[in-house]
Image (cartoon, rainbow, N blue to C red; front, side):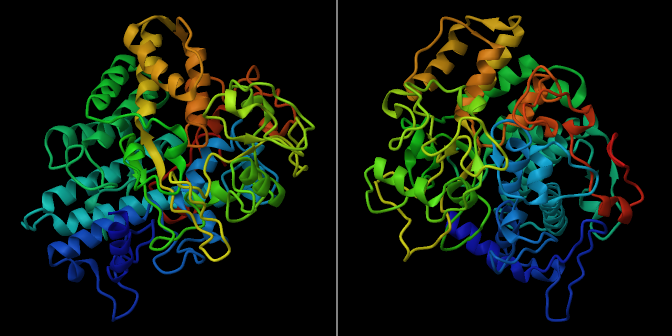
Amino acid sequence: MKKIIYSLAIAASMLTFNSCIGDLDTVPLNETDKNAGQAYQTLEDYEMGLAYIYGAYSLASQNDPGKADIAVDDAGQSELVRQYMVLNEMSVDALKCTWGDSYIVELQNNSWSATPNASTLAVYTRCMMVVTRANEFLKQSSAASLEGLPQLRAEARFLRAFAYYLLMDLYGNPPFAMEENVAGALPSQIGRKALFEWIEGELKDLLEGSELPEVGAVPYPRVTKGAAQATLARMYLNAEVYTGTARWQDALDAAEATIKMGYDLCPNYEELFMQDNSENDNARKEFIFAIAYDRDNSQSWGGTTHLVSASLSSEANSAIAKELGYPDARIARENWNGYHVPNEYVEYFELKDVKWGETSGFGYDRANSDKRAFFYNIGGTKEYSNSDINSGWRCWKFTSRDSKGNLFSGDEYSKLSSADFPFIRLAEMYLIYAEAKARLDGGTTTDTKALGYIKELRDRAGVSMPAFIDTEFILKERARELMWEGHRRTDLIRYGYFTSVSFPWPYKGGVPDGKVSLGQHLTVYPILNTDLTENPNLVQNEGYK
């Protein structure tokens, strides 16, 4: 099904919505292009238009994965999921990189400014692209009465609401555009609290009063009411950050409602991140909202391709493959050799017999360690240095393997990844329930249901379960369970640790030992200067000039 969606997205390039973020115009660039009003005639046209919205989450362009359709020099660095993950993991302690790209230096040193870099520009622009395409779709479909169209409209509304959720979380107070802004008045900002309330209302309406499909009613990876309910749970967990008012009970209730919708944990954690995770029934049962990638039909140097290739050197690539039973192969198709994990973060995992200076193996007893750990330290040094390509740990959570033992890393095959990226999965709902319950209970809980959910995760990981859990334990459990899935920055902000001098990590604030406080304004990224220039209705986030 994902091949159908993204083949349609490519075909939808005929729906030429040549709009910039500033004026949301939809006039075609040349006389042979169709504008949206001409292109939307049949249900298939609308299906292609919906695919066009889905595609904004994963594609760098409609034609060539090596050529971006937005103003970022490297097409792979223009893709939404790649830079969403980077904004949330590299700005904190989970991901570091030895490449010298300016956006990487700014993110891991927390030194970004109002001038956009590749990451802040890509995520903002791609999210606004989703909004623009969804608004156009909803405007063009508002008067149509085709059978099946209400469901498509509901999906478009969710995709727009989720893009606004990302913008609210990352940028605080983005422009708020609706259908009436298409080729109309420039949008204004409504404030983070009001945007939270709008998204909340939209998601509730999708759950209660729309044709958004029930879980299991449409083929994967199309969105369902599970995605709407889970997004509410995530928003409520962070409501105090967004609005000033905690919503712990609402977070617990929304997480529990999602859990009851029929999802299941994948028995093997490793299979969630393999190349065939979209065809693996066990993995798909845990996915609530995933972004699909396909090396044959929707190529991208972003997505999960960068997660597969960016962490490994040639030596590590071959050595890990050999340890896993592929003596003459590599675990990833390419060796970009840049991403690293500081030892301080790796220490959250229960690793047995960790050693440095070994010449073979993984650098620890992997067979008896937390099964969520995919690390390798051979040839590395314990202390991470942003100038040392062999420092810290390497991570191979995403690889070129599939669940049947195949290894898609031969020279004759594509360099790109087909692994889907799990934006939301069931394990996160377990963690939200447990944290919300712990906070409602004063910071620590022995609640049977909360402990049961965490025990399921730890049983799968092969580690023991404590008699009680507190908020600090849950933060560490989230670090283990959700590593490199785009959660860490939001978690540290919610806990008050992102800006605090008492929670250091390597190169926080540009300081090697990270023992420094950060400015509060860094808890949101800046609104793009180009938008401020083009739209006088907008103001910059506080603290940026």
